[in-house]
Image (cartoon, rainbow, N blue to C red; front, top):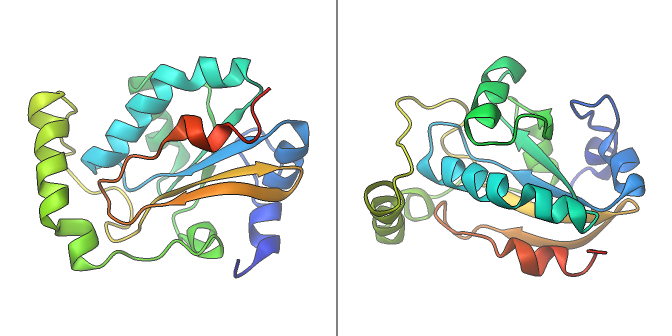
Length: 174
């Protein structure tokens, strides 16, 4: 971790730090891609379908996005997660503190992404974004944090990767 203090002091939409949140109950910290990305929309859809189940297992989902809060909240409502806790990070400094890098051409535009993008939009009906809202090169990731410690993580190898959220929370679920 480049700067542990950055992540421990990052303020959430509920006015508490990520460190404080992780002592309340385990936090699944999900770093999203930009809101125009089909894979970001797919992730929000996945989270919207499972959030209540995860909360019943004592897991708090916190999203990190690169937009202003008003824009983010509109997307969260659209994807069924209107009261989700989040961190706004347009500068991507929090992404960097978790060592989430900018994607290479193959990570962002490789054949795997085109195939998965087709599957997500045409077959599964995830809407395409009309504009990029955030850094289009920023890679996503997911971290499971409990009592200030990172218990597990998933670092995307490509923008189209889909984390196994259930495996991630298995270390900390009640």
